[in-house]
Length: 245
Image 1: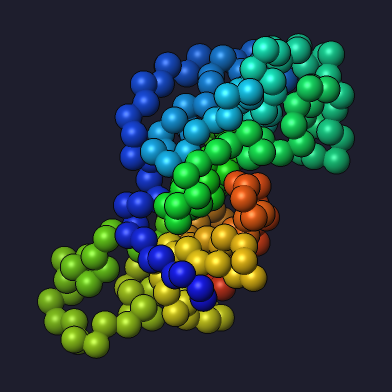
Image 2 (image 1 turned 30 degrees about the vertical axis):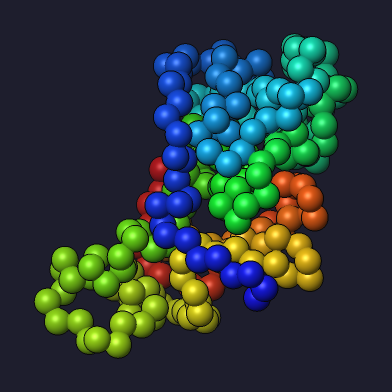
């Protein structure tokens, strides 16, 4: 790993205050969202939206369930009504795509190219993909990035009186959930950044309890000089429990 940077858990959270409008229940089916997805980017200090673009979104709503999709469009344009858009039939719910939209909204995102900016861009990607999600439409919203706090050992001491001096990542993983299977133990549990073959790379681990408990590794590989990224999600642990909603 070249130029490794290891982050605290708190580094994955938005670090700027953004005043968000109250959510208004949308109409059924696809509609232009009343919410502004740019608020997600504004919450991260190292990211900006390129001046020639803006982010806007469509909302799908049915029976209390919601999904959405975000597009980057020229700043001089507005989203057309969904009925006047092409539909992406290969995607769930066949979302609308305007002719003027970029294929990847991350092409409209800029930043200072610091390790923290890439971590923030990785988190922002998931948040933007979950834009408009409600009830059964939620998935990423149940992911909890590990470790839960900035001090794993202190977190364990709050419930266990005697912890050996030789603290191990495996101990922490088994402390937070009794896994049926752990395919591997991470060498670095905290979110971290490095260069792989010259490409910025961000890795973090999460627990998601939808259906059953899953321990997952997310690897974000960025294009050089861009925040466009490919994401690989690997399930490396599973356990009983979980929620169904």
